[in-house]
Image 1 (cartoon, rainbow, N blue to C red):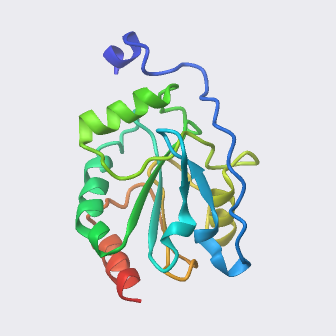
Image 2 (spheres, one colour):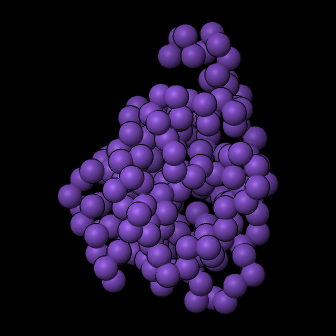
Length: 184
């Protein structure tokens, strides 16, 4: 951690989130598929592209004790992605454990854990400045209490389930929910 701080990757000041994109213009029944995120690389991630498919959205942080879950999330992406699951990482500094620079976040995730699943630009995941997706999910479940909180959106856009940070990507509960979401 000290080495990361010396390199300037760990910001002492809170991360300024990218302005959240408005919810996609979609019917109310679009649910979780009715949102867009700015991509960490620029451009847009439109969840509407995955209508009819399940989506797993995770708020992430590079310098969290749960960061090891990136490897498990990548394994989920490799295992379930070909079957239609979108795994989407959403970096956030709401819990003060994320780098200030999106390139540093991207490099860390790719070089340390081999992350190849889509990553959004950093944004807020809780409180009044929360990205609209997280506000929608919190209204149906609970707001993230820490990094690596996971939301599973059904093929029809409903929020199926929320998983707290301590639920590992390879846990029986999460993989059973993913299997069910891909069948249902």
